[in-house]
Image 1 (spheres, rainbow over the protein chains, first blue to last red):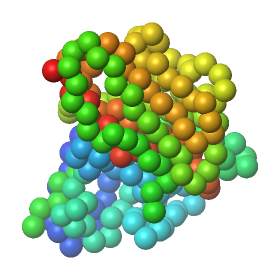
Image 2 (spheres, chains in turn blue, orange):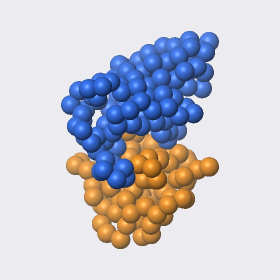
Image 3 (cartoon, helix red, strand yellow):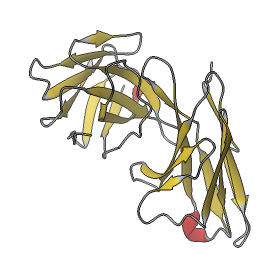
Length: 115
Length: 114
């Protein structure tokens, strides 16, 4: 799986959009980009994933650059409950879209949402 | 609702005792589950891959005789920390595959060894 690089920390004001960047310059064509977050003392929570196209769900949006070397997770209206460590992970998946391989975690980005 | 059930959520034990942690896949059959460990202020580190009906695969540096993994059914994997010592105190988390190319974590088990 390709290595990912994230800033160690970011701040965001409550109600504003939080944009978390991730660099994955060595990502291969069949590696997906996954985002998880971990709130203190809890198991990581799945947020979103994508391959090429931008994705949106009820939690966030994922913007992947055309060359796929970087991506941005967007929390459109951050709340205090979004304060967590956010992990960006590149993971190999097969053409069928199923992959239950391991997830390799970096240090992630500590996002602090303040009032 | 929860996709993965992990318990206990917190356990305190005396040094030298063994502790068993369970990870259950609630919505699907999982031939593979993963066990992670996380020390304070650190990221998650993969300990081992649990394979249904066969031996677990351990990451380098993880003692297989100390961290016993049993994956006897498609919905249950257990991690037993044998003869626990204070240095084994950590946050243990399981990971299970799901539908739609998404994997889910358990809520984690905080182990404190006195």
